[in-house]
Image (tube, helix red, strand yellow):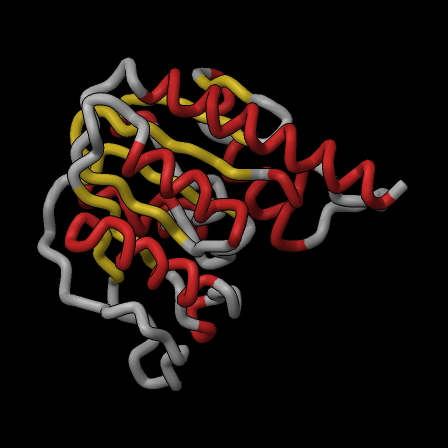
Length: 208
């Protein structure tokens, strides 16, 4: 039944979040980036801020605005995080400043250019790319992909968003060095090996 499927999906998500917290505890992480937010990824954000030990000092949330591909519930979820965790949650300004910003109680601030240790992305951030984060990564980075919707997607072909995200994981070093549950994948990789498969460099375009 649909209710049974919903319960199974929720149970799988809870197990995935618990698994993620255990594995992240192996690393010293200070600053995390989350791209997009839904009710599902809100739970993971709470785990990052409340349960991972030693605690993550700062969660920087990007791509909440509709012009950046954000979901309607994302801004509200981010405002809940700010209420619960205060200054440990920072909301990055919209990338597309010329377009109307999403209505939200979440307070956007100009965030400093500090090194990021962990990156979380999902189908809630269709404009995510590795090239966006590379300039602010240290020697290593932990990448987490929340993939519940794409894992359970129906049909013979993946939707454009899921195809984009699947490529991000499967066609990079993330898959070869990563681990997955049915809902979440995680990988810790050297930054120098992390290349964006959805972006063609200029030499490739001109020499192809």
